Length: 372
Ligand SMILES: *Cc1c(COP(=O)(O)O)cnc(C)c1O
Image (cartoon, rainbow, N blue to C red; front, side):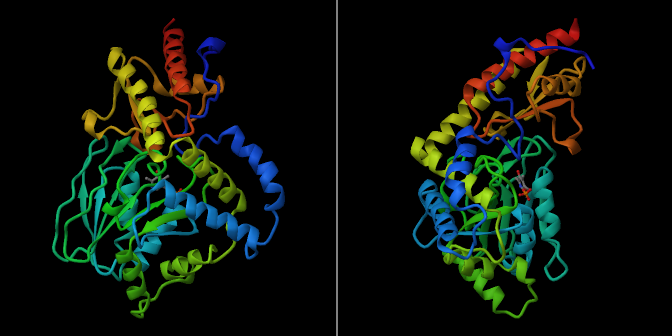
């Protein structure tokens, strides 16, 4: 590996550009030590931790301008666990799954559970996206708000399907970084290790009244539902600011701090502008040089929180990422299964737009140095 040292003037102040776990701000870590001193290592059944969970739920309700009757629900296991929970407790008979990358396809697999009808899967190749198709008998329409594996974003719109059909959005990498209208969704679920600059292991979701009613109906139907994956259980516990089993308190503390920081900085609209600024820096740059180009060819499909940039075949993107890593700029490798000559850069809310500009300078320097 070439021993290339990037001059300090081209380095970002923080070199974390990964898509999750992702950059955690220094102030969050400090608050972990100060505020955490009275919370970490104490019972999650007592008031201090319940108040922390309550603060997270209230902060998210504020951030997302939660419509009347919607509730913030949470549980252990991250977004991957949510897919299985949805197969048990949210999909009545059949889901439609938009699949245009790794994460959408994973939910489609979970929705192919033996007690359900085979899902209607609408696929599109990586780098583009598929559109909702209205299908009779589908009771859950599911799609990612942001497909993290490819850097493709979809607008949050309600599927106008059968009466009572639910719109369920995987917002794991979009939530907290992209503006949207919560009333267009029935379930908007995510995990805290992306725009929320926390650790993984938890799922959080905004549930509409229709989704809460669906969960109750399936729970009462006699269908077998494992306790750990029971959404009714999650709803009941969340209302008490609790989780079924022990949550990671560090994750909750970091999350709560990030939610307060975003709300105090101007809320979701502010975060949205910030991530747009950062991602535009990357797309504009990639379009301005002849050796890089945005992987997502349709600008209206491009993600504002995950930018995927293809490099010309004459440049080894893996070598570029490796040199960046040696210089403290980490996790710019592409999604492993995509197999492209590409850099993938998170432009999550915590990431400073100035640092993204520096990243472009660092990449330019490394590409020049590798060519020498
Ligand atoms: C990261 C990610 C997931 C997986 O989240 P886990 O908490 O690791 O299960 C799911 N969907 C999307 C869109 C993601 O970006």
